[in-house]
Length: 116
Image (cartoon, rainbow, N blue to C red; front, top):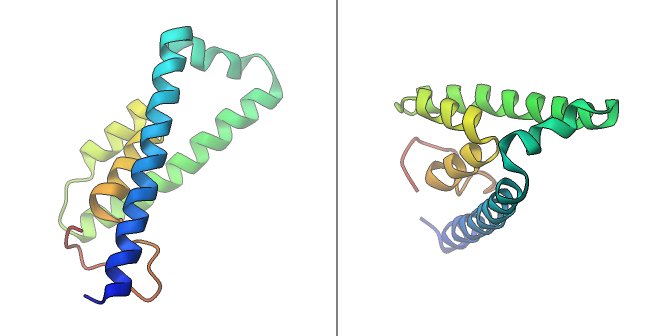
């Protein structure tokens, strides 16, 4: 392990944890103020809002496909991660990336399935 890899992976983990933490606060505030249906309902009131929802569904679907293959390739069960993503949206993928892929963006680093 080189020092560059350690710093890069560590910084990426900090960034992912920061994004997850801020998103959890925003999600908590939205749930507290509007409830679950109150978050979903506006997406059915205009084509613009529907486009945002469909975009999110497409992006999360692509991530779940990648996550399924990554988990299988590295000997992990993908089902809990897919279910978490379906239930929580981006929270599931963020936790997956923090848990297993904090070095994902490291140039030239090949993932081996070992936990970071």
